Image 1 (tube, rainbow, N blue to C red):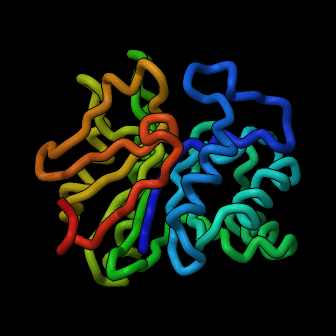
Image 2 (cartoon, helix red, strand yellow):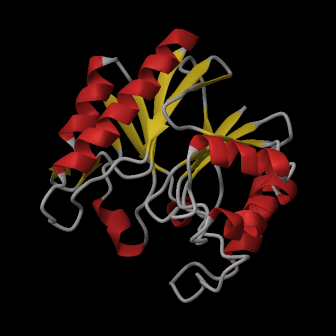
Length: 234
């Protein structure tokens, strides 16, 4: 089975406590309990960015070790805006291999086929606070998403997008990303990034033929969400 959740915000190797934020008390323990109560080693979990507060790849060791050894199943990572430790694919793959973290893979300009679903995605970006759009970033992320979607098409199955940033937030829309989704016929898109009061501005439901669903950790109670095949999805 396939599950998804975003924004674990682990800091087991750094000093970045999350319990200073409302609703985040004991979030690591709650996540582990919820996760292992329903996910088995036969399942896959798509992790939607902001995995670790580490600044460098080597500093992410304890957080990735926790995800690998304490949380069941296969894990596929999408990059988040706070994942400053994220390096090149070669270095990421070499790091997890050398440390025996064989349950961890990375979704970046590639795609995965799980339970007949073709998983594609990217970090994304949106002007959620009214910032002037950075066209270089917008176009880069749209290009990465399209590269991922093209790889997913080759795999067959239903295309499902996983993007860290919300493609649509309140009145803002990253039309460069949503255009890719619409052109390739993607019908479901899961995203994260939003916390606390910002969750109120989340777009959840069908917009222009695409079903958007928010799965940031605190928005789903630190409980991974089941992603059902199209035949069983609501």
